[in-house]
Image (cartoon, rainbow, N blue to C red; front, side):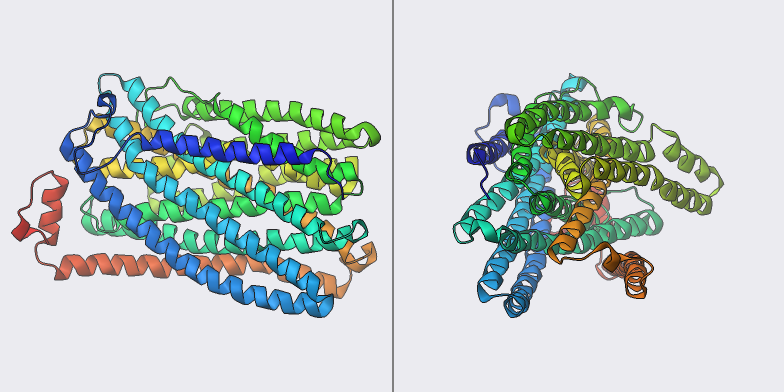
Length: 595
């Protein structure tokens, strides 16, 4: 149970990641959005006072909405965590000992709280950065390339804050928890200690469920409701300031795609490390996942500095591949650096365990698999490639053929990632069994810092585009820059989802293998021909459809409520539509006419 020389690497990398995240936040904060005159550097003040004031008003509304939703969600999460912690303590104390119940419960609550903190920080930074990204796009109006570059850097810095903060906090808290537990458990009780530590991953999983489902329902309901009532009822474009539901739409981008995604990947990140350590049979294998995670944070920080762009951003009429490569340079650079560090870790730890070189092969396979899944997702979601273009072409014959083509393309898009994952699992299992699969998941997620930075970039860019559309005083050329940011953000968000799903498959398989070992189940106990096993398999296959149906129904109900509320406001509030029309045109509304 001895993790040699790991303290300095893990604690140092985690602290450095937190400091780097804080430094990015401070750079973002140099650009202020305030209705009052500021003492900003003159180079940062090139916007008209009226523009800044309107940006601040919309930004404040989005910030208030995001805070309100996340506070309400976390109150429900808190009640659930307390209730489930009591149940967990009772079950484990009854089955084993009271001490094991206490340690598992402490780990569970710690994991849940850490996940909530990570998601909350990510949401706050994303909301803090959206209007600043719009303002950055509006500066240096004589240099289009500088405009796009400034806005791009602002959005990516916001994503970096969340990515590095989540990885650093998750790894540091897990390591501290492990060191505390190790002072109580003897070397012979290593398996019992890891059973208790697994509660940390369980806590993260519970919050991921709330964040993904609750935040996802909100964001999609707001998106659907705002688009339908705006485009169908009012005949106005997306993010038009005349649509009262646009604020809810922009709030949803933050609480669903930032806080929800963060909680989801937090669970996979810590779960992969816990599964690998649980399945390890030697001290070197137990230390390797922590060494890799610490090295991954350092490599992600270095990879950040490879992200750059010289594009000018041409709205939706742009080459998305060239914009995407600006982000991919950072991910690929971090991946190459990480492979070098992984080889070094295996060499340092493998002096007495030659089997670690086989694990290096699994790490390489896992990292490459993650990158391939990202590229496949980009292919199916970028408007540079055939799948999206085929959906566009079906629009010539009406909405029905668009829906049919879209569903078909979506179904086909599942095939390549599954093939990649199957090949990854079989190859890693052949090299080093279940531990090989677990360490491949660690390798895939080790550079999560920069991967999550590119994913969280998307909602910030989306919000920036919405703010530019809602402020009528912002020129059209600025909106073309934010449209290019938004187009790239849609692809990075989809890539992040694909990456999350792929890593979750490897992590879940590793956790199942760890459960099998801890429960002392033989292969015969998991025979598919056994009626009990087959029944469980069928029941499990049904659950995704049931949960998908429940979430879709919930989205439909919430979207309908939004549509009905907007219609009620226009019907019952005298002069609302006229006032919104004046406001969207930049016309001042007297205080007596402001409804």
